[in-house]
Length: 240
Image (tube, rainbow, N blue to C red; front, side, top):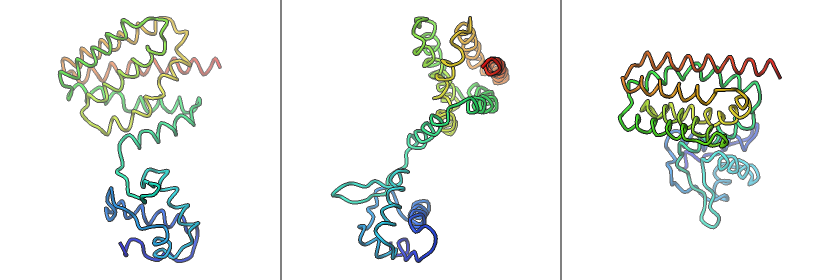
């Protein structure tokens, strides 16, 4: 512990130096999840810094989910969870939601989704197929007036398709992106005739390709959907 909490010295932004030093110790696994940190008084002495600088560093570490400050108990290194990373990206995208972000999302989906469909066709299980079929069945039965449920079901289909790849990194990377799709659909697709029917047709064809483990067909179906989406978005932005 002495090596980790050695004297900081003077220089620019002491609180940032403290923050980085503790973060680096976590990265190097010198501080493991559940480890209790020394008290504020002890840390101030070890780092040779003021309590103000230390508290600012601890506040930022806590906000980032790296430490947990428990009143009356102390400060502990937290175990980072996938949900924490995803939730941070959710907030980031929500705060930046505008026409530029929508176009960037379209580009990202065009880059990744066809390959996701290809990988899902190779790796899907029978259980994955059942989940996707149930998802489609719910969409088919969905009341046309319940637009919120409709967009949620479409979004869920994309998430379940990602899970069918068997690669958790795919889910971590794209779940925050997919969380914005309901807002995008509500904004742009509301008055497009036959949109639900087209979406269900796409899902049926993709499920069939996955059943056959036809990765190339799955890729092509995904490309066709995204090209259509791009045309719709381009028309929308030209009209606004």
